[in-house]
Amino acid sequence: MKEIMIITNYYPPEIGAASNRIFHLAKGLQTLGFETYVITPLPNYPTGEIFDGFKGHFKLEARENGIRVFRLWLFASNSKNKILRLLAMVSYSFSLIWFFLTHKIPKTVIVQSPPLLVAFTCMLFLKRKKRKLVLNVSDLWPSAGLELGVFKENLSYKLLKKIEKFNYRRANLVLGQSQEILDHVSLITPKTETFLYRNYPDFQLSKILPQQMDAEKTKLVYAGLLGVAQGILKLCETLDYSNIEFHIYGSGAEKESLLSFIESHDGLPIVYHGQVERATLHKELMNYDVAIIPLLNRIYGSVPSKIFEYARLGLPMIYFGGGEGESVIKKHQLGWVVPAGKYDELNNLLLKLKKEDFTLGFKNNIQKEAVKCFDFEVQLEEFATLLQ
Figure (cartoon, one colour):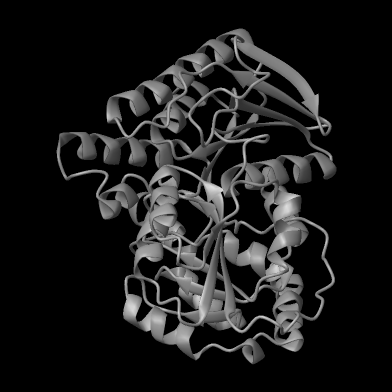
């Protein structure tokens, strides 16, 4: 049996797109006959604190769902302070170096990027003769950070760009979750092999039931990270609630500010449901008319995995983020598109939408399109052939 190792910053019991994506990749490869290992920090995302039951350990090893999982110590933090965030990445990098020196590493290793520094550590220490390194790029850092205002074009940014280029050059294969990512990689390192690996979900289909038409307002839902990039607080401040009620699931850096806004505007139809398990969330999402997928600014290379997850649920979408995600929504007729930052256009759309727009037939067509075009197993098998 061929061994393969996946090195990632995110893994269950942590929640979110990155954690789910890596879990399904690991489980899928295991199903295809690979002996799969996962190296990940002690769970801490998105709270920035080591989860209960994992505290006080330097390393934990367990077999979870047939996969050997090694959890390593790090200095956990979700602080906005750049030094503390850097310390968290550096601490995990040192734990990885210790692991590399004390354990046998398989010939094939998949490395998640970002964080760039963690990926750099892996690329630097693991590049040996006959070892295949696969870099799984989910966001284009530091370029995305520059677009979000996290970085400025200073010496630190230039250093990160050099690290990015080094990582691409060291990789035998780069996976990208969007075509924009692959185009970017090919522009920097034209000789590096690339493969489009979308964030397709892997869960059983649920039958779509007719919605009750008793409520007059459109039931709009957001589920996911409450971070700066998503801009949920600004969305709450800017939405026209004449024709909608807004339901929110998730956690993140904007949580407290969001709760303060809701408390001080108790007349607005905004309901915060907190953070729930993924299986529970899927059941609850089936009760809404339409989901919104927002990005505060268009981020080059970003195609939110929510698109593919909601499509499999048969949930119509309003995509409010720009970029490649728009073309996916339009091509597969999954809902509506509003340019990023155009809040007037978004409100105009919400005013026009009626309950009759979210028919059972429309939702079933979305789900059928997901089954046909967003097939996790087909994509995984294509990727697995590249690992042989």
